[in-house]
Amino acid sequence: MATFEVPGAMLDVELSDEGGHPVVQLHGLTSSRARDRVLDLDLGRGLSGTRLLRYDARGHGRSTGRPVTGDYLWPNLADDLLRLLDAWFPGERVYGVGTSMGSGTLMHAALADPRRFAGLTLLLPPTAWETRVAQARRYRLSAAVIEQQGVAAFLARGQDFPPPPATVGHPETVPEVVAALLPSVFRGAAGSDLPAPKQLMGIDVPIRVLAWVDDPSHPLSTAQTLTALYPRATLTLAHNAAEVRRWPGMLHNDVTAAYL
Image (cartoon, rainbow, N blue to C red):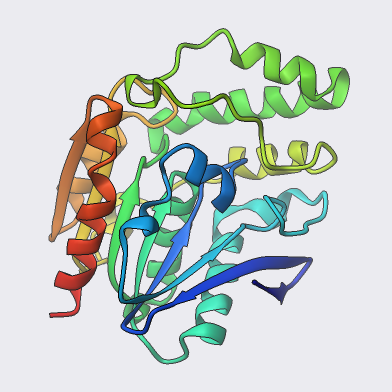
């Protein structure tokens, strides 16, 4: 375990060093690397013989943050990521894997520094472009509910929505963000989007897009559009939890192939 300072935050960082190729793993909005393990979204557990860097995004998990909306915009999170890679893997091409917000962070980082990445796994790409408008409205409403009624009221609202089939059987979890930061985190997400499609077409590395069905926050439309945009992309779709459990093995194979 280690900490790494970025403007306005201290990031909690963990390196599993088994030698081999460098890999960085990012979690999703209001999650953490610990919560991703509970939800079977820690694809790094399928890796061996790599140098795997995991960290909690600013304001999430064991990392600190401040109640500033701009801190949580995806381009700023991408800057945090590139600073980490400069410190841990200077001058190396890294394989990146990110869930939801983490996938958005990776795409912004890959545009900012195209030569930094050897390949990408984009896990559960979030709402983007047209579908982002309604989702951003929900995030702003969540921020207002937390400020006016508290976190318990916000959590109660979430129980009205059925979980995706691929998550059935997993324990219920709560946000890995302290209450004082949640409104800023949500407003940062509301103010973020994936880069424009024309920009994304310039990311010419092997890309695996992993998606599951029946999840409005991670619609198939985003995954399908990304797969069509990227010249070297493959889409893998899960309909149940058993299919999700195959994803770590796919990541292991994709990392190996990216460095051949």
